[in-house]
Image 1 (cartoon, rainbow, N blue to C red):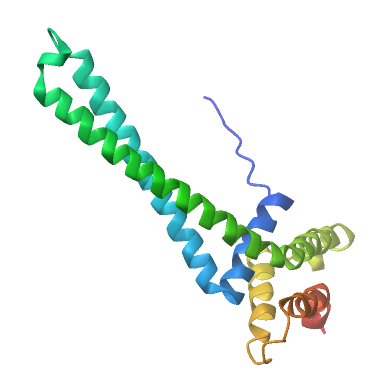
Image 2 (tube, rainbow, N blue to C red):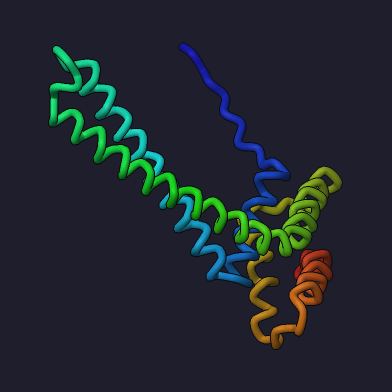
Length: 179
């Protein structure tokens, strides 16, 4: 009998990415939606390019005789080149857009970073007393609740001020929640 142990430990980087996605989804749902669409679109286009390459390689490897005499193969190669160029152009445009989105998302990294650090601090409290055991699900729900608290506050003039306000609230929300 063979036993495999799988470690589902949370990493700070993984949690930071998850929390960043949550805060951006709350603050800028347009960006998060666009980023998700770009990821799916890029994956589809890359898969389509790989499929085109496979078709060409298959036809070339199974071709007998002079390649230049096979008009169907030449037409397939020409159509594949045009399609490949179109996809490559779209992928490049999508990568530029994705970089612009990532720049905008970076504004919220400090909030996610502080929350990630705070999660590990709160988790370590269980070493002091088991009463302080909290799940990741509890923490994420609390984090989301804090982010939604800002719904009722009018948008601050500058995103930087808003992020600073969120950072302050993130640092106190476990304390505020327990009292």
